[in-house]
Length: 243
Image 1 (cartoon, one colour):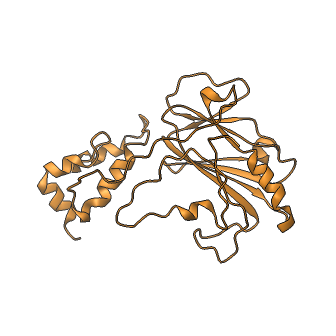
Image 2 (spheres, one colour):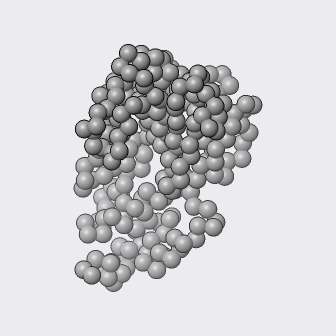
Image 3 (tube, one colour):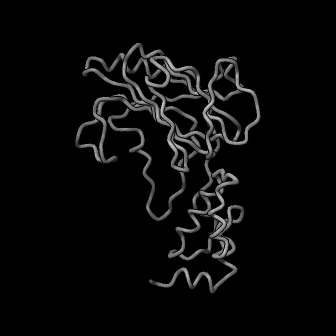
């Protein structure tokens, strides 16, 4: 297998292993890997409200800061599959038989504002956020069918757009920005705003998304995050006041 992928045997959905401490919540590390569930979950699984007990999931957290990332699917030959792409904005893109048949073409997740040229035969999906989660899942027809699905999981591949033509799979990436600034002096009762603003720094905001400007009066900006509130004690006291 290529260096850009890991095969992680788990008895649970891969996302279940990504819990973070409630009071110090650094974001997920920049992974650029596809992790694969290897056995079916049971109805007792409660990491999500409605667990799917008939498919195997794969998952990857991707950073598009360096340009598009290409996702390659195998030929599912009539087997049910679906791949969901979740942006931090909440937008979801779905890849499945209805849109692409049993063998989707290579699909590039293209960050908003990128002006390069995709390789021939690669379809593009415009993504508005820097970080994106990809979640393919494949139907399993009984326990004896698991080895067949494992082979299909091997056919899920990720490439940087520059390495797609020569088959160089995506390598590991840098750690993500922590949700709290090192040495922060923000009071705990206002820590949510700091964490929110640090995350927002990595979002792409379009010109028609100007509603965030309404928050400027409380000292929150996309460029500076929550820093300005530290210079405005009255605003800080107003936000921290009960009721």
